[in-house]
Each structure stands twice: as C-alpha cells, then as structure tokens.
Length: 304
Image (tube, rainbow, N blue to C red; front, side):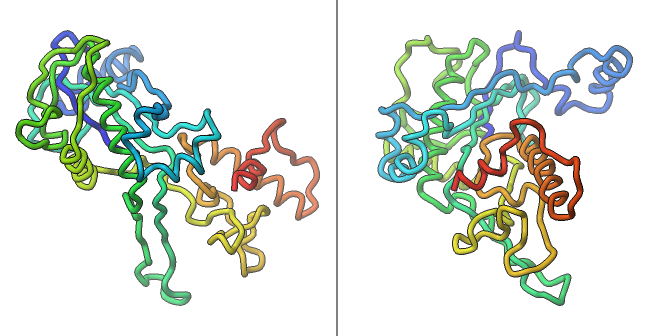
C-alpha cells in the first residue's frame, strides 16, 4: 500500500489538525466528542473508495510483467479487483519535515500481490530461536507493474479533484528534471477531460524506486498456515487439521490460502463459525450449525 499526499485548498475540511496537532489543539475536538458525540473525531477521514481494474490501454503499459498474472488470475473474473483506491482527508505520512497545512491523500493497494513471504520456526525445543521470516514485499515484477499503474491512476484522479492545489513533492517520486511527470508544475485542478500525464521508461524506473522506498503492508497479512494441499505448501486441511500432527487444529486468518481483497474481519468471523461446526461434529455435540448460507470454507478450498 502507498499513501500519496496532495496539497488541499483552504476551504477543504481535513483532519490534519486532529492528526498532527498539539494536545491543546486536539482537546476541543475530544471534548466535543465526549460531550456531544459530534465533531471532527466522528470522521475517520476516509470519504470514498473504489475497487478498480486496468483498462485495455492500461494493460499495455503493464506488459510484459503483468501479462501472466492478468491472464491466469483476473481476465476471466471481471468482478475481481486488481487494486483498491481510497481517499483520506489528511496527510497520513510519518515525515516530521512536512509542514503543517491542509492535505489530502489517495491510497492505493494491490488486492492480490503475487509475491508471497514465509515464516517458519527454526527449532522444536528452543522457544527463543529466531524465526525464519521473509515478508518478500515486491518480490515479483508483476507487483511492481501493479503499483506503478496504481500510482498513475490515483494521480489522475487527484489532479481532477476540486480541492487539489498541487503535490506534496516529498511524498512523490522524484522525477528527472524536465520530465512531463514532474510534480512541480500543477497548482490547481485540471479539467476532467484533460490529457493524461505521459510517462517515459525513465519515469517508470523512478516510480519503481519510489515504491521500493515507501511501500508498506495494508495490515491484513494472512496465510501463514494456509489451507491448501500439502504438496502446495499447505499447513492445514479442510477440517483445520495440521498436516503431520494429531489433535492439532488452526482456526484463524492464518489458514486463508490467498488474499481476500478486503478487511479480514468478516473472514475471521466466518472461519470461527465454521470451526465451531467442525469441532462440534467431531466431538458429537449437537445443535451447532453455521449461519444460513455461510459456505465460506467451501469457497476457500474450491478457490484453489
């Protein structure tokens, strides 16, 4: 995931003071929330979002790195998003050098990254042995292609928003001098039908380096005990049993075999409900059944 920051107009309502203000500045907001349940703190700043897929023309710019992923994972599933985009009414970066002002950010994150990390124990007797852990972010060229397209898409969205007043340049790729993609040129919204920014190969390399330096997790990491066949590096079977063990089950979001392209809360609830049914059946406990229509476990297994 990336949050790209933009300068906002003076009339824009943002949460920058609430997010970055001093204790004295934030206190009136907190007092209003406690006394009235109203005010700035009733809003998390995320006012809009979308699930998007590249157009045929955009797919050409992602080739060849994204070709196989598109054909095998997305092309035949028109309802499957490649990217999620969300707006945030504030600067949400961590750079203390960013001056106090009004900002908005546009986040973009891939729904199904290709690169997969791993985590393994290294000792069966030493609880403090260091883990073999590799998150493997950006371990696939397809993931670079996805994020590169995401940056370009959200920038076109942001520069057309009425509150846009330019770029917070420190939060964007540092494009070469003279590049058409340079972020020091626009200080006001462009028309909706304005031509899109044209990027060169050098610009694309700059965007890739930007992602190497700034990419972060979207906080919903899953799948470390994936429910897959063992020969596909699975850890548990469809009844939650850990391969190669007895009387050991896993029932949490670590069993998901792939990214669910959403907040994992509902997935966790579905797994918990189904786990209760499975365990009750094995123990001979009657009266435990899933909610009507809850076939999420079957979906996880069949999705493979």
